[in-house]
Image 1 (cartoon, rainbow, N blue to C red):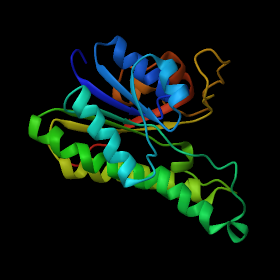
Image 2 (cartoon, rainbow, N blue to C red):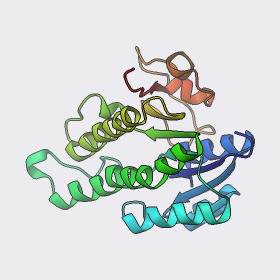
Image 3 (cartoon, helix red, strand yellow):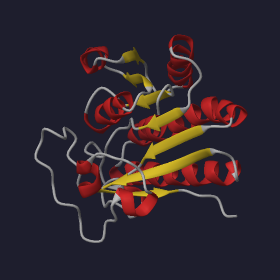
Length: 222
């Protein structure tokens, strides 16, 4: 990662913050993005506040990164909203559905659209899409969140299939039972059957993530 440029969304706290700090420690020049300038300023890295649920916000994040740090080599799409505000599907507010899709799925698409082409031209790129176990199995009262996280996994797979033998590699990260404020918070034990990061894709990730999540490389078929 030495000298590489990384853009990390949802980087003001939790998983995004720790990912950004790890990339920085590995030698990358890192831009963190979220809606809260206060949280971002406390991270101690380059930052820009933007609404990543809009095409304009995604374009701003990419443009600021490229202007200040250079072309983007690593994209970590970690931002999103959860399902705590959702109801049963027949009671669901349609605006909740639209907002969830806007942030959790439209944003990742826009960011990938704006960065992958450049990665291919330069011959190097790494993309990480943070999903959820809700992207592999449904939540009872989380239709919008479940659908959006299934969509993120589909997006990662589609990008991988499109890239073929390119040196740009998409990865999806499905986190289960992971507390948002790690590593300082008490960590939950990894659910039975959840594979570790290192065993699934050989990535170097935080120990707490290895215990609480399952990572898999979304590879195209050869």
